[in-house]
Image 1 (cartoon, rainbow, N blue to C red):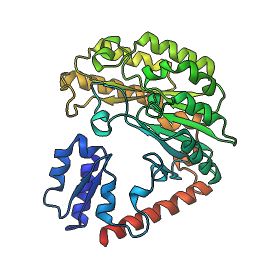
Image 2 (cartoon, rainbow, N blue to C red):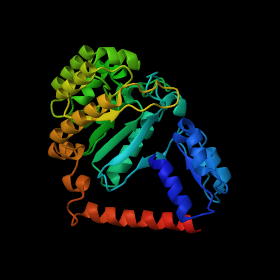
Image 3 (cartoon, rainbow, N blue to C red):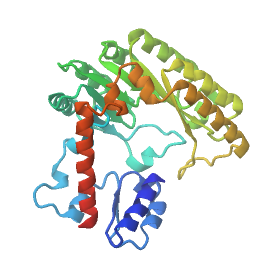
Image 4 (tube, rainbow, N blue to C red):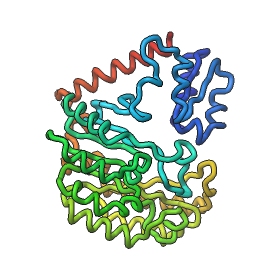
Length: 349
């Protein structure tokens, strides 16, 4: 919805300008994107694995998009947005799962991983730039490396050997894959170098987990969390829950609410049908009750920013933006102004 609103806004402010839309949405909701672009001069959609089309459209004179790559990724997938106070590295994309609520496989396909040595090289570049919080991103980090003959354990082991004063955060580890590799992951996690990881459980009900196509049980998650707490007591553990999945009962939903006690931070997402996923079937009145309970829980829990900064995962001022006198905030203002000017020039040219 946000992407479609942005397309309409660009068309309103720059009528007649060609629009290029890239990313997963062009595969997941292709018809909706096409409708938003209808009547637009020169509109193009580029899927997640069609990056060579950028060169055909923009015809760069100096560096071609297809030449900027290591495996299939390079620096263009890493960001040093100072508003977040961390250095982000995309280490893999795609997944091996067949969850019934998700369309990542449809959009991105199977896992493609960045080689360990390239990830380490980006970590070192982040350190050279002065960043100390390194944020690792993947659709499912648990299956990192399957395309390279490696594993996520190999990656974590290499990361903790990097010299320098840095901490890692990682999003996200699918629980079943994580538990398969757990014995190999705990030594790296127990070093204290990992400040925060995301472990998306999705439901506290075994019945709903099975309906979702998740291949683990609540008891297995509880045991995994227990082992994580023992190995890395100072690490923040957060999770995600989906509520309103088709056939979910109030008892199932309450099981998810109850399971939040295992985590430092729990995020809730309302189930929405995607192309090829089951139709929502929870009565509107029941969904309103659940939404109210979720909002009440979130208010009591506090925001993710509050949880992370309270536990000193990220610099307080860098995350919240409440201290305008810091170097980080001055850089953020400069970065934002430059980005806005660049975007305006793109629209007006």
